[in-house]
Image 1 (cartoon, rainbow, N blue to C red):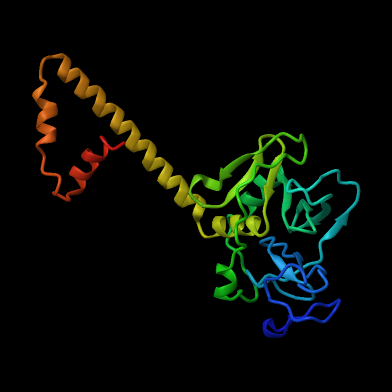
Image 2 (image 1 turned 90 degrees about the vertical axis):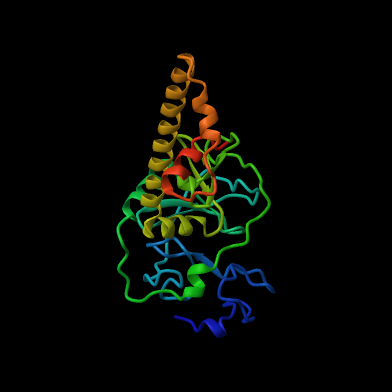
Length: 245
């Protein structure tokens, strides 16, 4: 694996940062999606993924894919890697992945990864700076895709077209995989279950309160307002949350 401190462009020899996707001088491509485990960008010539430590693999190029980059960078390069068929943009490093394949990637990667060596903490935390928000066309149907926060709480905002696929900006598919492997889906489901339970409790309480007031017991609402809100007991916090907007 190349020394992260001495990386250089294989085409012109200029020094390059470990997370650079293109040479600043000759614009040659320096990193490509080559990790079959997390789909992270891997520097040309590296033997292992800097993000997860899995052994890098040269993806299989596919011919005849009709996809174009939703960000306007021309045709996507079709490739097969890690059991997934992807469309990769050579300019922005974004990835197109069809809906069923995306679901399969997420499902298969809920299992912990066992690799010979781990990536550095710095590499695990490194992300691509987000570009300005833009709504993009689907690679299949051309209609504008929805922007979706993956699992509602991950903070990874993907462009998705129902029934067709998902567009991931550079490194977003890797971030999805890392989120899933860290137990993010389980945490998100637990939070959603708690939110639904709270909403059900809110509705039940509101119905009971309404029924009580219909019977002429209006003091109940005023009594609730007399509760000391400085009390930090969990029961009181739950009751007060029922009225939050």
